[in-house]
Image (cartoon, rainbow, N blue to C red; front, side, top):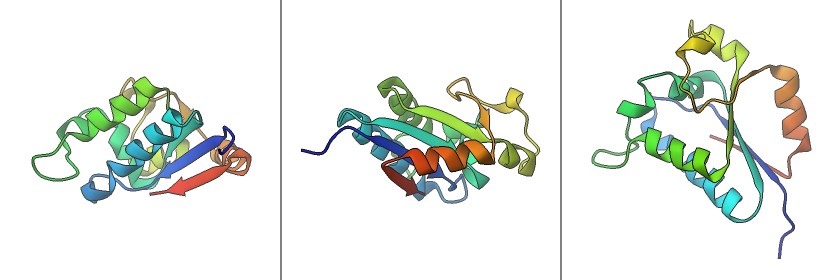
Length: 124
């Protein structure tokens, strides 16, 4: 059996590629269910998934669940979700634009540290 560890998911996919937006939340849920710590870092277009009104209106496939449902399930499981400060600027967003499930804004040093500290890093 694998020892408990830390899984970090860097989410760069956003609303322009909806089919890539559900799996990272599912993987974070699986990591937590396997007694791992899981954190998601939203960068580039992934940041848009944390913008109010976006995930609530986006599905990975037509007729499927909304991305906000995947996001909230991961949050309820204990997954931490943070957003890159530079990607907020990229999309002309501020912290006020973010949904309540976001755990805060972080910078490049944090992202480097968490990536180096993790047992598994996934990028979507």
